[in-house]
Length: 132
Length: 318
Image (cartoon, rainbow over all chains, first blue to last red; front, side, top):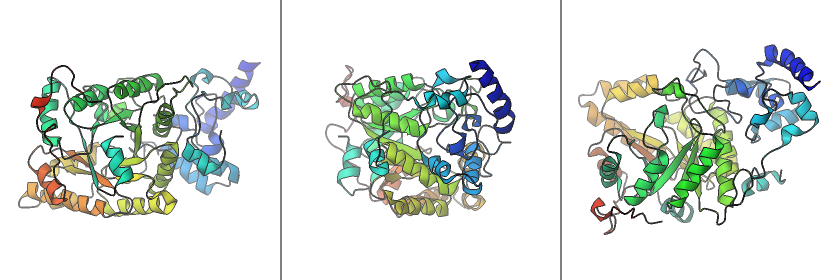
């Protein structure tokens, strides 16, 4: 059943979003742009190597994934809660989830597991008023 | 507390940092020569981590050498070559030798280097690495396992004010500040208007005085390195008129120096800027000239005057 869900997800999200099956989908918070298509798999914004024309340092023919994400977050009619999440610090990828269904991981909350040391800094607590 | 940290947090003095030269064969002898040139000029010197995706003496070894040679190292940690376990090991290893300044970078891609067939890692990204450094500073590994006592750490990050998306770069600064970065070394930027907007943006985001901005200037001898940076270094755009200015000058080396001085003075005048990071590609007397022209007085003491004081028995002063 688990494999079946993962297959369905792959078939749906692969062609549309270029899903890389990381198993911890953050599309909603990145302007519906999959950050795993960044050659450096950066989850928190563009690197410093973006070319003058907005294209990727590694793949010059491709527009920077994070420029796309930024533009879409500004321009697309996405829910404001999703747009707000754009600037959140997304945690490191949990490599154990590779190839599993992010839909399942979302409903079981497995995708929100982070290591015990991954805590908000005092500055983040002060800024957000919450500790998570 | 490191000297860099003290100056940035407790004084209003302008700080100067530099890029240590990459070390290969006969590394320690070369390190001594660089240390003799740098000693007394800089408040911190970056121990680089495989710059531009080329293998060299490691960041940790360079940082320890600097400690031994009387320089204050800033350990660069890059995400390209190592996963989070190795990054934590490097931070802890450098810390064991008294390294207190750390700077987190995403890093150039392997395609920028000379071993493009290598596997790229990027287990963490830049902002995540900043938070990992904060985790260690708090006394924990990523797993939550305790580090007692916690190492003393002064954490920084980098940003490129000259690469798109320009307005979003400030939001990334806010993210890195929130993750624990107290200083920000900038990529060299040959567009003064972009640097102005970036610094004003950081100020308008309420981060003035919270994160110290340290822009970079590069000492070059002529137009060739400017062309190289423009054509070959990802994220650096050198406007044609800036290249032409040096290329067509009667004395290109002098014009290149004046250009660097001008960019340095312009950068120091921006809001939130607390110092300069200097990359020296010239290896001549213009380093001293630039520092003097910027009003810096060399801090030479008896203990750091020469490398002759350095004993062979790892005389680092933690």
